[in-house]
Image 1 (cartoon, rainbow, N blue to C red):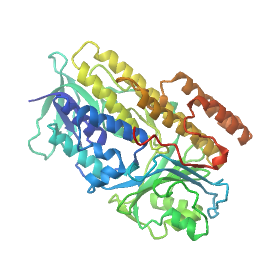
Image 2: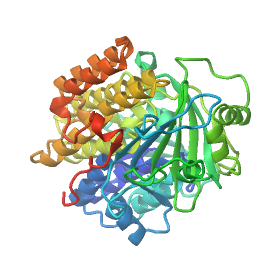
Image 3: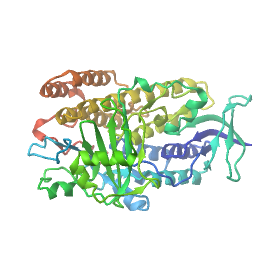
Image 4: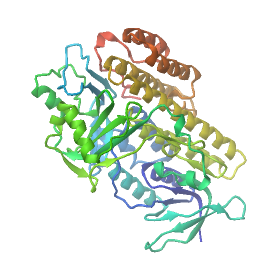
Length: 500
């Protein structure tokens, strides 16, 4: 019989990093994954928030091998074998159906927002299969008891204090116990929803405003967008950074596209359809992909020679991406944020939100496991996580409402950038262990602003009026000069000072 303090189900980067942190604090941890590394996962982008939280986790729990992942320069110097990409910020380009991309001196179809001030201090694109496998191995090396290709059966109380039986279904894998005892269970399975199924937790996805789906893969031989622009005589000299060194977005009337370029010159790319504007197409993933490229010819040119390199089965197509559960924690269990809820990749919030959850949950388990205050602290964790899911939904759905009208869309992104940059500075200024909720989700004044502006976004008939109202509404949270028409959508200076 195996006895542990915490059993973590799900061995992606979130579950693995939490296992590593808890081991560094002296807890006995089991990490259980139904798959085997390396395995395909969609590419993701870090952000300044993600880097801040990862840096702080590494300082708090003495993780010198993980700390270099918080900046592009140190990642490349220390772990070049882990494929990543440089991400200087966010770039957006507006397309009209059936027409080639056009740009003008006012950058009315472009928006670039810098997130870092240099390549060395840049954010990163994560090739998740490399990062996930690396962190799983680091958890094992730190003493976490790690199992791959294992399923977990129905968890039940053991009858001995606050201990639970975890049945293990291991198939052909050797040296796996049939059962373990644990004092606490963490669900890090994401959309797998392991505990939601076991505990029959109510699904509240219907409460979410965002309603989208995607078709995606990783590609080789994708022409750089900057090269596409310059080949058509479009000037990129005023771009504050290379637009391909970014989470690059193409914005359409019925959705958007992401492109994340890695150092091996492969690109994570996907089209996201806004299901509030139309039903899911009734054809194959390949046919859908080709239809997007045909409808937006400049993107089609970019992918004219592209070849799918990951995953092995080719393009993947999804149903609705969003999910939200009624609960995120209980007396003996908790979910990481990505398991309790997910919205959309539009603002690259996934890594940062997961890291914030790890930071918060680790402190609770390290200090309160087996103590009387555990349940009250878990209730606060749940409240915070579900509030953050609501905030992300508001920020993303506001941008979706602006699709097709780039001025309106660009204005809506300012809500996200105000939230992100204000959170970054509030976090740096915080005293002790108190940290604001992710994207200021626990700030009543900010929440009221976002709710009001999302309503006004769909009501205001004149976009100039909405822009003025938005600029005034976010003024107390506008710490980097957003909503400045003189900048003509080219924001060079939103990054925190590098000395922070």
